Length: 306
Ligand code: CP
Image (cartoon, rainbow, N blue to C red):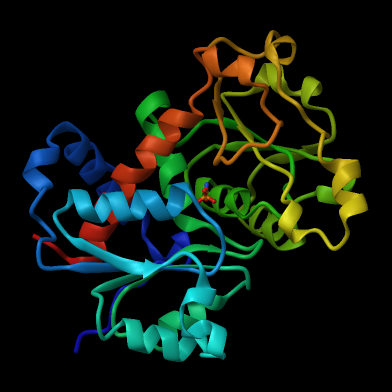
């Protein structure tokens, strides 16, 4: 059997492949009917050991819209995981029934472990505070569709940059495109991990770390807001102290450029006031929609569906 192609980190895809996925997503958006039977004989399994709305539903909707079928769990205790089954054994077993597996897990590296035991493609749907590669595909398709390019951008990442896996994947991936500059906006305790900064330094990518959003909002092409990740904190007191560090409201975006776009992987708690939703710069629900199309393109690519 040919070795399966997995997506654990966006570096598993070349720049050419990323562009192919975005092109295919645009084709699917333009002509969804042409793709509606492409995966008719295929089954996608979602193994979600952590809660999700967008990632799980968009993967399931993506496979259904490609004509395929879906199985899986969103609550591991309803499966033999509750009896102590290992990731390796669960993966090998589900691989007997499904053609592709999407896994979310609270432990960093769990989907990587699964991929070592799998003959079918494994897609990392978020592993702890580490990476979330398909959110990054979503973010990049959104940026490319709205801004027209993935280079020459000034990107502000704001909020919980320590535990927010979406920003780790996003920064790493946008660093592969030319002339992007990052503004890393967070409280001191929630700064970006050293390993992400190491990647930026290694590749001579310009970045600046600041605490105040007001100091940089006027310079940005993209403002990427994030939720403070309550589930990754070691104690509730720290979470309560830091949870309202940034609240984007109408007053704050008065100083932002007219063409800046506001993204958020969602779910939000209160870091973006609902009044901002009606501002033309707010693109986070459109972003969730792009997520389904880019996942359709990814499934087609990993399954080699023709
Ligand atoms: N953005 C994202 O991963 O959302 P869910 O947790 O709802 O899947």
